[in-house]
Image (cartoon, rainbow, N blue to C red; front, side, top):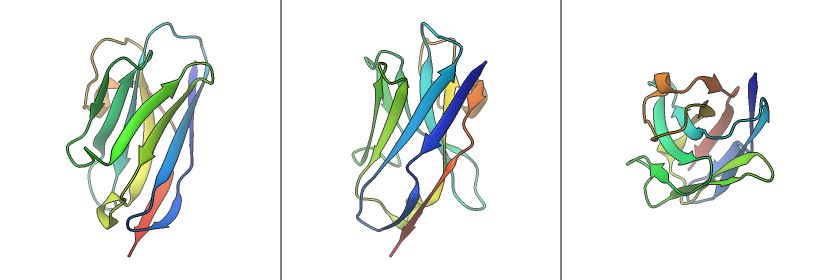
Length: 125
């Protein structure tokens, strides 16, 4: 089994930065895709960013392009979401998710088999 645990959320002001972490534990995987999704209050869950297990390919959602970056540290089994220039509309519960098949980075949440519990990010004015 695979477990994902997010951390790093909190309350920040618009324009601030925040880094989320997602620790992978459990079954050892040779290849996978790690994705970050978010669900704003009252809205559908949306893709934020994704990365291949070795970090060679990334994909960033249009809403956060130029402000958010994704990275992975395999030695620590941890993926990161660096969020800069945060806006009020970035307020959401952020989830990390894993697709154990590897391959290409999907923006569809149904592609991902494993999910963390989520971490709240609130951006205030």
